[in-house]
Each structure stands twice: as C-alpha cells, then as structure tokens.
Image 1 (spheres, rainbow, N blue to C red):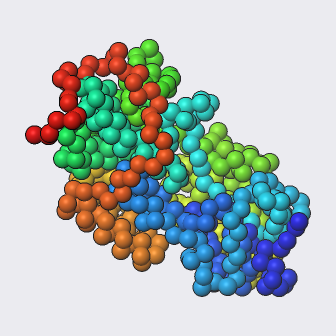
Image 2: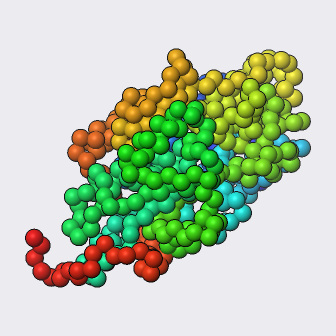
Length: 460
C-alpha cells in the first residue's frame, strides 16, 4: 500500500520523509516542523536516544529513561509532523517511495536518511554474542548485566568453594567508547562496590584495553593521548596497543597466540554504516557510508539527503567523524536546504544555488572516569584540557544537549547523588544469570584464596 507522507494535510505541500530518530533525524524534524511542509519520521523505536551517555547506562550510573525521550513528545507542538514506528527496508528511487517493513510504501518529494551505524566485527559476526558492543539501550543493559553478574558470581563461588576466576574485564578497542567503558568499570569496582561484598574485593578487578593501532584515542592530539594514558593508569586500567585480537571465545580472547582470560569481554573496535546506504545503489566507502556532495546529496539524487554516520563527508582533507555534533549539524542543514528549495518553488530537482554544508568543529571530549577526562576544545577558544576541568566541561556540555528539561534535571540529580555518596541507583541485573565461559579460566588463573567459607556461619 502506497501512502503519501502526512497525506491528510493536503497534496499541495511538499512531502518530506525522514528515516531515523537519532541526532540527524531529530534535528532535521525539529527544524522542518516549523516549515510549510508535511513530514513523516520513521524509526523502529519510539524514542530518541542520547547515545553519548549510553555507557553510563551500561555501567549502572543512569537508567535508560534518563537519556531517552519519546519522539512523539518532541514533536507534539508540530502538527505537520507524523511519526511512524516502522523500519525502512528498501527504496523505489524512480517513483520516490520508501518501502517499510510492514508493507507500507511512503511517497516523498524529499528524503532524509539518518539511520546511523552499528557494530562491525570485521567479518567475525560470531564474536557478537561473546563481546557485545554499545549502540542501543539493549546493548547497554546487556553490558550492565554481564559486568554486575561477574561480581555476583564471584561472590557466590567464593562462598561455596573459597575460590573464583580472576575478575578480568577486557575491552577491545581504544577509541572514546572503549576508554569510557574501561574507566567506568574501574570506578564501579574501586569506588561504588568496594563495601557491598563480604567475600570478594571488587577493587582487585583488572581492566584491560586492547587497541590494534599504535595509540588510544587516535583522533585526539598526542598530548591528550598521553594524558588519557596517565589517567587510565591512575584508575589501574591497563592499555596494550598494537594488540590485534585474533579470536574471541567464552572466557578469553586471543592476541596472536597469547590467551588473555576475561570474565567479560566488550567490543569497541569498529562500526559499519546502516545497510540502507547500499540499498540506494550508489557508491559507498568500506564502512558502507554513502559518498555525498557538498549538499549532502548522493550522486544523481538531489532530492535525497544523507546525514550522520551514514554520510561520507570530507572537509579540509579529512573525513568527518561519526559522532553527534556532525550529525546534528547535517540534520539542521538538510532541513534548511529543503526549506529554501520549497520557498523558491524549485521542487526536488535541486535547481538553484545554495551554501554548501560545512561542519563547524567545536571540539571533542572523552570521559575516562570520576574527575578524569580529556577535552580538545576548538570553540569558543582553542585549548587542550584534562583531568577535573575537562570532566566538568564534559558534564555540563552533555547535560546541556540532553533533550527535555526532565532529562536534564534527572541526570544532574543522579550524577550529583552518585558523586557525593559513591552509590549507584541503577545496579539491576535482569535476564540470564549465566556468563559465557565463567568457569573456563580455572586452569589458567590461580584462586584468590584457598580457604572455603562456611556460608551458614555468622559473619564477622
């Protein structure tokens, strides 16, 4: 069944379809909601997720509701915007239609595709079940389950047998996500759970980052890379560069011929663009991102705009990073461009000249742990900060960009409480109580103690 986007509003208005409710899609829809066009936003989930804080859900500092906002509530003041909870699976570019998973076909005059990216295991998709990545709320709650469960299983096994496998946490990938996960695990083990267990010492947990390249945080300046290493060392996080993982198995990973035991293995080593890019039949890069021109259009399709991680955009000889700021600016640019074309009555052939997209780089920040971060600031002044000043800057910037007053207030309150009391309010384990390969390390790791405990005796 083919339907027009927001058809009830009348056929004379231009129809804009937006695929994806992430940073690119939401910024586009908020701008288009103020223009005389009919808009339909399609996403397989009913909420917009603030991904930069997703790792804090994964490590039990925040709950998913703190960093998510229903899309319908974001656009409730824009009557020209419809929202469909559905998934795009293909296109008819000649007829300008989007095919949805439910069988619906949406007609459009302009199409914005901002469906982001997912994990890349470099051809070893079988590793996904053993080393989850971090892109969705489901990923975050699974990581939280595994990390917290490792401590619970160690406590139980210590009470029953007087021994347990070493609490080794291995993160594959030394980019911002890997560094943030490593620092957060260290913080939880050393600070927030230190007094919660009777028979194990959570602070004895070991966190290891395995990075295949020569440096962690490769996109950052060298001085900030060094500062990051220093701060990770203070958190007792070990870093190995030039470490190419050759295999991932239950309970351990392989670096060449070397076996490294792990009660939990996490993946932060690579991403690939949404598969929708390749369905357009245009040129893509090795990640599946679509090559676009200065107007964010793929070749031969001025009616289509590609935003965010799905767009391969080069500026000043470098490809723009797949982070929130470029996606937000691309979404706003696409909406502005469509508004100008509609106002000029030019139609979807893209006739007429307009200012091309240019990314305004405000800088990059990565948090490492409590009072630890690095910040490469480009605006309103240039500076390289680390430690507490960088952490405070990171904190304020992320709260500012959270959508919705309730979210900002809730996150600030939770962070303040966690900081002052060293307690986590979202340490919930749901789902399975099993970890892959929990007992596979027994022949490789010595016990922390050999004295069995009488679980029926009174505690001292």
